[in-house]
Picture (cartoon, rainbow, N blue to C red):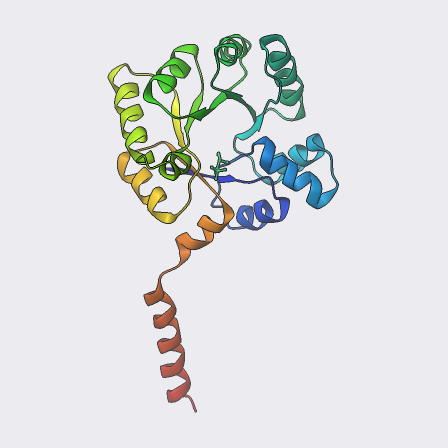
Length: 218
Ligand code: G3P
């Protein structure tokens, strides 16, 4: 399973990229707004810097709502770097934009997906990626990961090429379940990436090895 980082924070991306563990980046308008405030940089400059740090796909989301404006915004974003993927919200106009961009060879990531039927429509429209938001479904008492299982089954049934990005990840259990289900990608916050390294027995083991070594070499 590929791991994307779900952030626009340049420091986080730089640090994760150094470990060579990150296959791509996803952003959204909230994450971009946070980084604009933090750095004072403009949105396009932030995206450009991200593309210099990570060579994989970088999702940048349109903020326009109607078809013509979404397509125009997507074309501008794509000019920042070839690996930019256009994140489009799951709406009727959004799926028309996906179809149009697909014909132009521009990769898309359909976002704010909360049902299997939405994912089916995105795949039929020609989306490169579809992003079910598991954490936000959990928040309202649903089992977000069940949706991922449904989407993977549907895509498998019809040999859709669209890849599933498990999004709105909140904890390592989401990541493990995504990998067990065979999801193509999980996009995870920086905090979750750090949690993946951790186990209390690893910490205890390091301390014990250290103490034993010091004891023998007094
Ligand atoms: O990738 C989508 C993600 O950024 C949404 O996450 O935590 O705001 O639900 P969250």
